[in-house]
Amino acid sequence: MDTLATKNISEQTQMACPEKTPIQILHEYGTKIDCLPIYDMEKAEGTPHQPNFVFTVTIGEITCRGQGFSKKAAKHQAAEAALKVLEMDPGALPVLQRTENNGLCEPNDQQNPVGVLQVDPSSQELALQRSWHLPEYVVVMETGPCHNKEFSVTCRLENLMETGTGSSKKMAKKVAAEKTLEKLQSLSGSAEITWTPKPIVYLESLRHSTSDTISQLRRTPLSIPNTDYVQMMQDISQEQGFEIIYHNIDELTVNGQYQCLVQLSTIPVTVCHGTGITIGNAQNDAAHSALQYIKIMATMK
Image 1 (cartoon, rainbow, N blue to C red):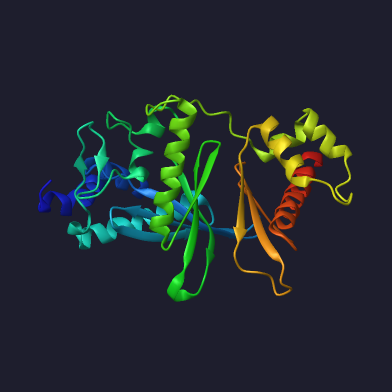
Image 2: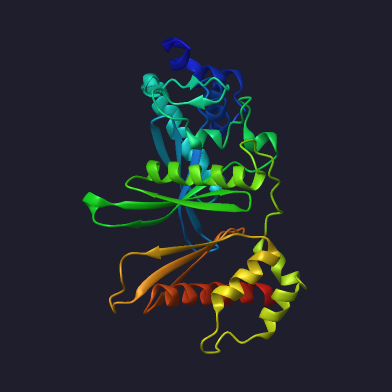
């Protein structure tokens, strides 16, 4: 693609199809240059009645941010910002080269796992071809001083979750994508991805559940000393079909206790905090908090 075509692609697409959203236009642009945009939810804050979502979109080396009262609105704003940058600096995108097996990789670099998760060996979008949701990357933790940050990013693909860490969000995202790709290949039993995802677990559906573990959770007091809440959480996740990831936080609390976050691959994603005198205690406390939340959702009328 020459420079002039790259420069005018966003403008031409919008003129030809004025009803298209910035998200659609950016996606079409990414398809033309073999570099699909990747959206990351940085944070979700506010109240249930007045939420505020912040998303970033990355296409090549360009990253732009958007926010809104819904995920769609935040992505819309991020895509709009990226289109403006592309019009000003069309040469900022790297040219991706095809490998011998017709995959995509960055020049002078190993195959990009973030791209592989969206593109299969025949260069069609893996997620879209299988009617999956596109991989979602979420920054779950940021630790360390300004000059030596460490980021933890979770890659979520259907009901799978893998976390990567790195000195930048981009590096952590790449590690998370690599782990997810390895998990997909492991579950498929070969390099060719044949894995079929389990149905996504919606938290609201638990209030109507009559399964053994949920029924037991409704009856069980969550205040019994020395209870193995990690195992209880594991039993529920295996029965219901969602993933659990524990994120151990390096920084201690002001009282010198260990900290931990537990993340569940439900919709919406559930993240709970726990503390304890050991890492194991902190994980058990985080699992206890998650179980309390699930119990509330499962008993709501």
